[in-house]
Image (cartoon, rainbow, N blue to C red):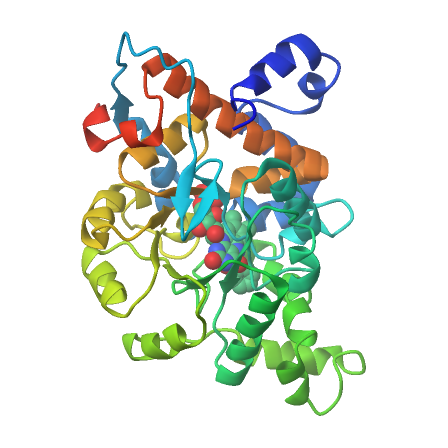
Length: 388
Ligand SMILES: Cc1cc2nc3c(=O)[nH]c(=O)nc-3n(C[C@H](O)[C@H](O)[C@H](O)COP(=O)(O)O)c2cc1C
Ligand SMILES: O=C(O)C(=O)c1ccccc1
């Protein structure tokens, strides 16, 4: 590791005055208010909103407040190592960027997927690119530099199309396939309903479909000639209500590491594991799908236990570096952040995303320094105590 993540603090104190300090906020609330202004009402309601009255979305974040980290003294954690092994890769930290559909729209120029991939290249923090990128997946992958990227698959009903998307992702150099299982239909989202968001967003969801030979072959006229017919076809093929019977087929699609996203129940972990997946992604989609459910963090220990050594990726409610540390202590191998980096993108493009990621990592690193946990392996459930 070249420089500890906490060094971001020094840069800001000693060099960044006039640079980062006036440009970007250092709290989640600060990010939210700046992003709301930058995005405007429609995009804001899409990104910030969740299902129902957003009880689960709020609970995801507040679940972290119920755990406190014990400080350990006389440890001298002058050097920290946050690196982690995942699917044979060594990542500089457990942090990654969760997939966010049409995140491209959050950037001023509408190419935010490329800007986010650029932030992955600059920080070493992997991006999970959504099936719903605004620019084709090949163009996104071209911006990753030496940072590995993962491809998130929304499995279409057309199996041949699913296969084609996976082949393209492999060819473009993605290092893992993340299949999202909790969103074959979108949840009841009052904010999106009140801004009638989806009809507008739909037109921006199509890039990976209209650039796909299998998708194009199923159309009578090209998407350029008849964009409406392409959008209709997209709506028809988008959501596949998969069942366990489809897992062998999903597994057969690729030799890349296969991760299933949206798992919270230990029994589902066992079944996924039996089906030969390489990783479990514990998430409730940031409270955007089902409302009234368990905060994802409360599901994590049961998932980790059932995973029994298989890597567990986690997201939903991560807002600070201390949240990252707590999720690792509860057994997550890698920790995803969602909305915060979208807000960074809205505020400052690639620089804004880099700022959000570096801030999360600096806070995590400095917490480990102060509390005496030099490596991730030192963080265990015994490092935490329930406080409420
Ligand atoms: C605007 C938005 C779009 C999303 N789109 C996708 C998507 O395309 N695919 C997917 O698997 N998850 C998607 N998610 C869910 C995220 O991957 C992640 O589970 C969630 O954002 C984590 O919660 P957090 O935002 O509270 O950190 C989306 C989330 C947001 C906020
Ligand atoms: O909004 C989401 O969370 C999401 O995953 C999605 C699904 C379909 C279209 C756009 C975004």
